[in-house]
Length: 87
Image (cartoon, rainbow, N blue to C red; front, side, top):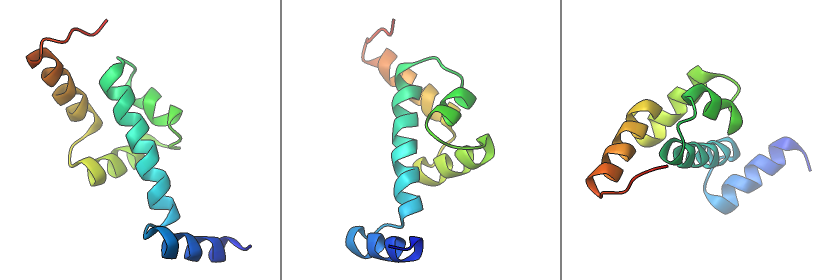
């Protein structure tokens, strides 16, 4: 199966473009790491499969409406308000 045929069939079946689907999975993994670790944003970016930080930030903002750093700060403030302490 050619790349074009695969992409067309993937979008027809799932309703999502393959690249967008992959980015959604990567951003989801990044959110989990931002929430649960103190790793640098750039480290998380590369670990979840993005090739450069600018694209990671652009895709993150597109899907979450905020920067990765803002997401981490919001997540940490929610943890503090719930009385949960991260180790």
